[in-house]
Length: 151
Image 1 (spheres, rainbow, N blue to C red):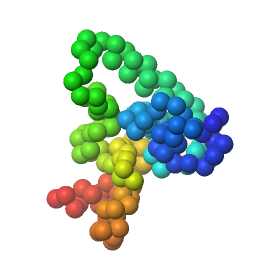
Image 2: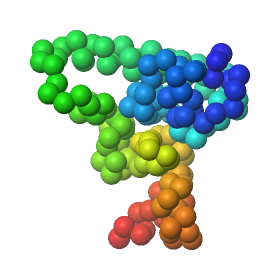
Image 3: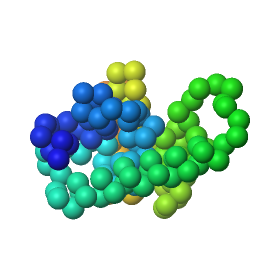
Image 4: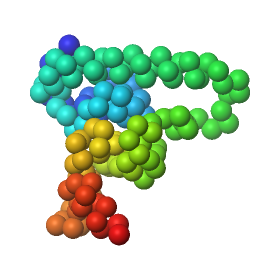
């Protein structure tokens, strides 16, 4: 499978047009959430079961998107990748529709990746380069730490 040939973080691999054509940040976020994979999972290290989940999630996400988009009668006034029915993309701090945990994000270059720490990273809060460098030891490493700091 293409994703196992090279070593990339999955969120980055999905948005690389040399590897996958037509998958942008929005659908990458949704596919990884559906597959229950971390956006930082390295493609070469995926197990066969994870690759299978990734393939199934890709099909499910696009089938669902096609069905939903075909039901829309009006062309959107502004072109946007944000859809109200997305599980994680563009939903920073909103509850995950699966588990209710607040959606988190990491920013890199001009992009951001949205993910559910409970569904996708086993409760680990991924380091956002700019914020984690700024906050250093104050950066929360887990959902528990994040919740403690929010009280």
